[in-house]
Length: 132
Image (cartoon, rainbow, N blue to C red; front, side):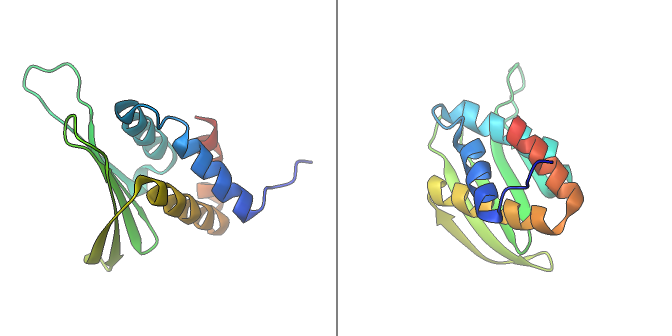
């Protein structure tokens, strides 16, 4: 029987999985969108750039709602990544803070581990998240 990793180990695993595609910003956002939409579709909203004659529709923004926080990662066309954390209570955004991408990864990894610890279905989905 395989032993479950500790919550701190899960945080590290989630963070490593999130960082794995960070060398190319476009690939990174697309990989995040696939991972979050696949693992937590009810908690994830992905917005894509739309062009009338464009074949590609790159990711514009990813928003993941976990607990009282919404974690957003966005990019305008060829611009830099913008990472934000918003405190949301009963659907109302109380505050929004721009944070570094590294801090965003650490915080969302922690939130994912806490979410998985309290929800068996989420735990299974996030285990698949690590394998993507």
